[in-house]
Length: 271
View 1 (cartoon, rainbow, N blue to C red):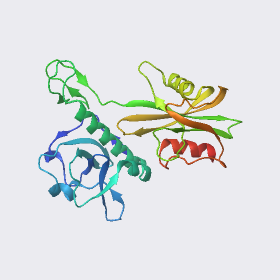
View 2: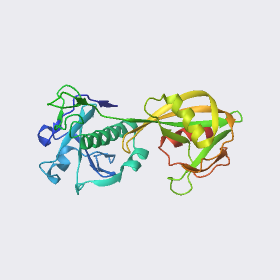
View 3: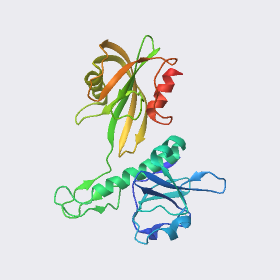
View 4: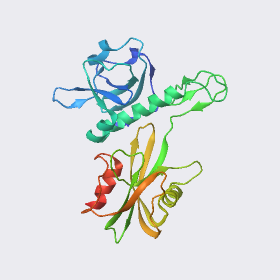
């Protein structure tokens, strides 16, 4: 299992050993190679070192068994590797590799956006004792950020019908579960009740937690719940949602791609 490290090495490649794994990100793609068994994985440093500029900036993001994982954003992926979209990687690869990639993308994005202190504008420095960024002038410390979001499976008719909706941002004719971000000062449960009322005009009861999934676009933490329909008209708001309805396992529209937490939760109820 991938292990998170709080003390993150930051700098150029001098601290990386030949056997360390490197997660190389270019926009929404990641570089992969193949080991001797043919399994596609993140390349080792010795495989790609000669393909990268000497001043490439790395951050250590964790380890798996005896392997350390370093991450960097690059302009060009090494010729030795094959590009794979991050979304496809998250749908196809085991959880420990997903965790490593999500950690890498989140940390790199956060560090790119937090170069200067928000209080005194001084250049931030990596903390020597944890994963934070320290302001040497005023002492402020900044830590990696995540954005919690809720996604909820609402059922009725003794669980035989599931509420699915088409969001205007979805591609094609995909229908999925109701989701939304938790607002500042709001509980997770409060966010669920608010989102369902604002977007669907319904009230729910018997709310229960299911599972979670990191979604690094750029730093969402998806928290999945189940709730039972209680009251309301179940109508799309016409702004975020263009349509919604109650569906069964035998009669439903196009669903999200396998691998996403939305699809896992939908399959859980339809199966």
